[in-house]
Amino acid sequence: MEATFKDFYDTLIENLETYTGEYESFIDYGPNLFKLLCDLLNSDVDRSLKLPICGAIAYYVTPDDIISEQVYGPYGYIDDIYLSSHVLKMVASHHGYEFLQQYFDDEIESIIKECEKKSLEILSEDEIRSIVEYIGL
Image (cartoon, rainbow, N blue to C red):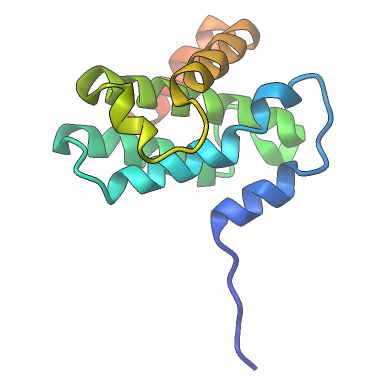
């Protein structure tokens, strides 16, 4: 019997496809932000940004991050989305949003800003500090 493995992006989509909660408007961006981070590793992104990008990707996969999906369900993706937007803003500061846009179908600048704004409204300062420190930024 041949084993079939799912791509983690597909797992994220599956985990969020039935979520209709209060934060749906930006939590649904999580899988696509994850995919963008992965795509950036195969791009000509500046070498100094690869470690933060890898950290943000790893944060999605880590089961015991600051707000665990295993405990909080879809709400647990808010910290992942915050970290993604934080790192993607670092990439945009270095390369510009046009660079990111070539790897994303929707208007990436407004999505990053919306995700950051909404997650900052929810997360405490201590949580934000812990999230960033978790990957060594």
